[in-house]
Image (cartoon, rainbow, N blue to C red; front, side):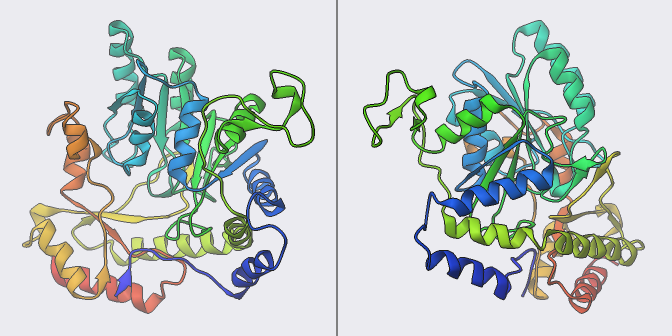
Length: 385
């Protein structure tokens, strides 16, 4: 079975982890700080805070943004559960903004219209989670303009977009978002086995994020409410979480970061090759967002159903039967039972729902060979022509 995505781990990665295993620090040690500094430098950000996974990163980013009961978080329906659940963890109400029919990202002009209506009803969002779907940023320039006008915080969920760029700068630089979240899950661009990170240029946010990942506690005398009792002393300043990453994971992530350029180059080569090989099949290929250069975490096509004799499900199952581990990113989030129970229903976000009936994620990872890719394309041709 050719998976839709998988990690690329080599001996250097294994050696990096073994070195930490043989050291004095397995967690809360110096490798974490080195990993944070390396990612921050790569992304031209001032601060990076590593945590146990990207869901935790989204959660503490929302807490740091001051999101709470009575507030509103908006995101796209074409995303994984965590992009919305992070708002619910804070007790906030969640709503969605439909997707662009070309890029399949959150549509900035639909957002503008919705913000105008929300201003009139007093339901403006406090936080917008802008998801860089498949590795490509949304129209972040327009979103940043709207954030300034309507006074909401932008968190870019760039879980798919480590190594991507927007407006000529690395995703994560902080030019268009207060905070950016990365994921280091094994199927992502680089992996730390499990892990996530929040990047920001605001020192007050970085300080709070660091505290929130570790029970809301501090050993910094400047943050304490009374003088230190001694070198053992710490204080819990607020309610935090145990979202710490380990040095083992940071060592793997740091080693993987050295190969990021190679990984991205191969993903872009594979994407360009898919574009050539699929050009004459009855499928819609991914479109580029102006100013964005994708990291190509995913390569998603949409079936042109009116030109194909088989159903969406039949094509999907036919590819699986041929040994191709295709996937579907994503089931519209507002149609999950939990969100239906909150009042969402079919028809609320028609573009995302239409996308769902046509989308298939094809295999995309650096170790995918040309021969394997040719097999994917041939099987898709067999099922759609």
